[in-house]
Image (cartoon, rainbow, N blue to C red):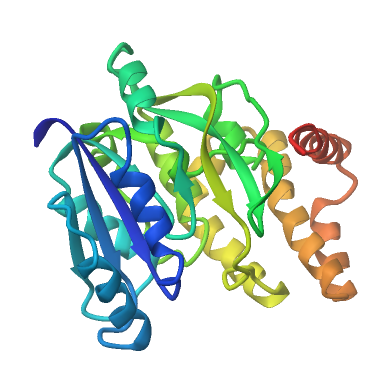
Amino acid sequence: MNHGLVSCIIPTYKRSDLLLRAIHSVLNQTYTNIELIVVDDNYPNDEFSMEVQRKINSIEDNRLRYIQQETHRNGAVARNIGIAAANGEYIAFLDDDDEWLLEKIEIQKKILDTLPAEYGAVSCLAMYYYNDVLQKHSTIYNDDNLHKQVLERSVSIHTDTVLFRQEALSGSGGFDETLLRHQEIQLFLDFLINYKIKLISQYLIKIHRDDAQNRPNTEKIIQVKQAFFDSTKKHFDLYDRHIRKRLYSAHYFEIVFVAIKEKKIGEAFNHLTKVGINIPAYLDLYHRYLMRRRGS
């Protein structure tokens, strides 16, 4: 582990056209003691992987490292490979279609270094863009009881927004490689069992929502949620049955909204019945709606 070094991990899959923007936002940080690890999750030598290699080769910066996986797996595997290869005292992540503001790491590291060891990470706020037009800001949240807030999907926290102490992250077990989605939530839940995350109320990242390749249909999101429930059951079980029902309901509502959008009324009704006559769950939903409206 190199003292003071920040290892940034960018997994990339089928978005080689956007990769340079993400790379430059890391290499141009005002904090310069950085290594950047790009993990190529494309199939070796396919058109996307070849384009990633061309872009990597166009950059003359010895802080940039490239790792090609033996075959395409998923984002969780790619991120775990990056963690294993990292030399830094700190670890950060960036999706290949997003970008950091130039002072993100300098600001986060300075604050994290002042915090006691119980704080294993710091997070920041995000701005959301569509076609390079600002659509909304993430809403400021209370970082107390963050485990429950993450589980109920009421806070805008992403791996992109967080700077981790390497020791704390490695001790949390990494990403569940069986999960094709929601592995970020799973990681945060495991992490928050032992550590706190401090929110820095500054907007230090741009999240771009142009690419729709990862947006699930009704069938897919049902599969995603079931896999997530299986992976994180121990976290739901930390709460009494009344709270637990509200937590599951937050995820059922996400299925309902996708089903309604696709006019799968039967599936929407089926998951509404799982919520049942649960007034607190509907109040939670309304609260989440108001929070997201404030960010728009």
